[in-house]
Image: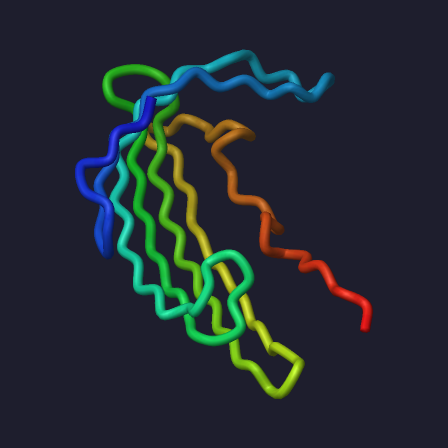
Length: 127
């Protein structure tokens, strides 16, 4: 369950979910996550799916652990820029994040930051 108070340049949301890691041998049991997050976003891209011009800057801060479940804070800053030169589009992406367990507790694998994502690889059309 995820509820957003306001969508736009700034959004605040409360997330309550049960998570499980589906890979065998990882050794994590299902866990509960209750988190409050704030997201600030500035988007000037011409198309959110396959942009050819513009930029996106996004900052997200999340605190989890009230009253039970995962206990951590996580902060992430992402940026991307796109410029068209004829039939070619130059795209640059970058992301930086910090994850810290609260109260001396270790963070779970499902809370960690990973490389990659849906826009890491783009399709190319022949011709």
